[in-house]
Length: 125
Image 1 (cartoon, rainbow, N blue to C red):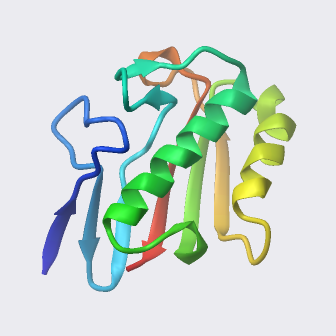
Image 2 (tube, rainbow, N blue to C red):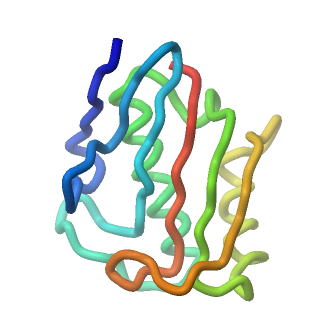
């Protein structure tokens, strides 16, 4: 069974994709960027502000799916600049204070809306 997940407390999808899909006991999120769900605009700020917004967005999507960040088993972090790794990691660690999920972090040439960070997750449903 496959169920589409949507939250009004996270940015609307800006393309033909779902915020998340629940299937076989897992929730697979689409990548979230630093868009304020109230305005549907990229927030102002550096990598720390953007990482915080991204993780708040992911938390809202997971909540709509009946789960949360504490159930995340895998993340992928896409950075515009690997020089932002330490600052991103500091904020990220506040959202995963114990038993953090497995993670990959990669630098990419460009992200949607020219944001600094995008993160997707896989969580237990």
